[in-house]
Image 1 (cartoon, rainbow, N blue to C red):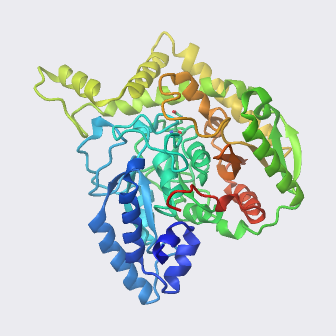
Image 2 (cartoon, rainbow, N blue to C red):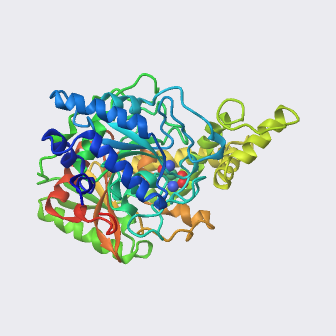
Image 3 (spheres, rainbow, N blue to C red):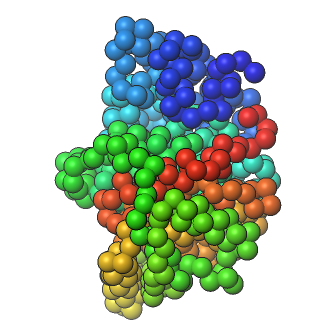
Length: 491
Ligand code: GLN
């Protein structure tokens, strides 16, 4: 293995140190990443690369680093973006036929910030169409394969970004999380994934799925790298009216390894034996033991409206999606049906041909729950239950500083296992979607294996308190070796 190759298996800070010590340069790192992406293209996790642009940017980074003037700790580091985050002059498809041929005229706020920090964007990662799904199977590019076992799903919808980090293509990738789409694939692929508080990261340039739930966040191999990434992409942005003014703290300062006296809540409803795979529960209980030994205190809490989470999430997310996706009409963006009779035919055919079946199902459901006769019975009711779910968390945080749960009820399922049964697919989000409904930050980190596949530990914080969940995640990492495990092949 060349030094570049072995570095790819490492984390962002290892790559940073190697760049700073001159053991490798950004151009070599980018070349090695591109070579590995090409070599493992059968995983179908990267759907577009910007080879020559990335190489030119790496040369510019090398000049800055050689002069001792790197722009930031991300200068010269190769990264990937989920295919729903735009970059000027580059295609964005959301893994949908309807956006075929679309090239963005502008940078997303996060793209702007990452480029400003000197990161090298290698390209785009696979996802469920318009971020709707839990497996990265609903995609025009075909399903992504889990690097731990190619017969298994990567999780979704940001499965391509999670798998890219797990396979050692890049040390950092961005995804989006509307109901679990960062944490669930992070769990399935054995990497760290962070969903920031709602309003922490600008959604400017993220193609909207459900605007009151969507957040962009990072995947990395270490908690500290996620902290660095959020420091870089977070903060107020006037172009997103839901972006919040809270200052962005230096999150890495919170990673002291010290968690003595912190109170961690265990929600009774999330530890129901019947609902969780026993192998997952064993690993999560071991993790609780590690944190207890480190000085954390555990308290039992209750989140009584948990059982309404999935129904509430799917009513609200689909209602918002039906409205957001109305803009894809064949006129303004991407693909347009040909030989049409009139305008109505153009709309109808562009949308019928352009959207996949899961997206259509959600538009229909969303339109139905917003229709005059049913609005109060479904959408209005869901909004009221959303408030109750948020109040559950407010009450719980009077008794604890953060909450610990499994990220998912099971490890990565087989490709195809749930694609014919949307309801069982929706249940994959049973532990993650409540954080989006309540606007909370959530972290998933590896806590061991069950039958050879990674298990994720979820930490949920108070709104805008990413620092505490990152601190606890980092303290766990310092005391365990789970983050060092990787898929056998290629690592
Ligand atoms: N799996 C959930 C859904 O299908 C969440 C998706 C997401 O977070 N983008 O809606």
